[in-house]
Image 1 (spheres, rainbow, N blue to C red):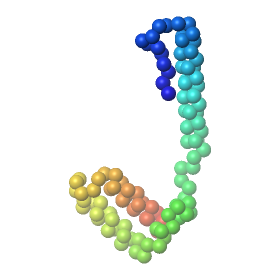
Image 2 (cartoon, helix red, strand yellow):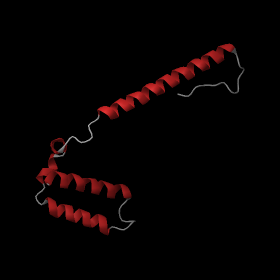
Image 3 (spheres, helix red, strand yellow):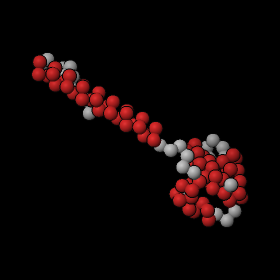
Image 4 (cartoon, rainbow, N blue to C red):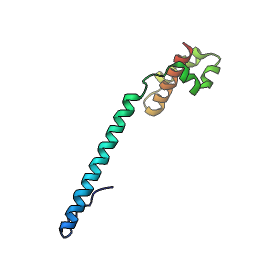
Amino acid sequence: NNVDYHKHSKKTVKRARRVAKDVKIRAKAQKKRELAGMDELATMELDKGVDHSRKLYPAIELVRDPQGLAEAIFRKVRRSGSNSYRFEIKLLMINFLTRLVGNHS
């Protein structure tokens, strides 16, 4: 992936041309990747809505008492100390809560 600049080998005209060509190709590929990333962000929809979420998470609709479940999970998140759950797990719990409330509101 990296360009070999031949820092510790004999400098020749052929190697200099090859290095210049490699640098140019790498810069062009990097620019292409950056432009592709910007196009994706421009065309991406920020919020696809509740209907899209219901298609992705049909089990959330089958919860019998969504408010009770949400309160119980939120209580766990608030009461848990810094060592009971990892930060990532707490984030997953809060993400689940937002999806649950969003679907059942």
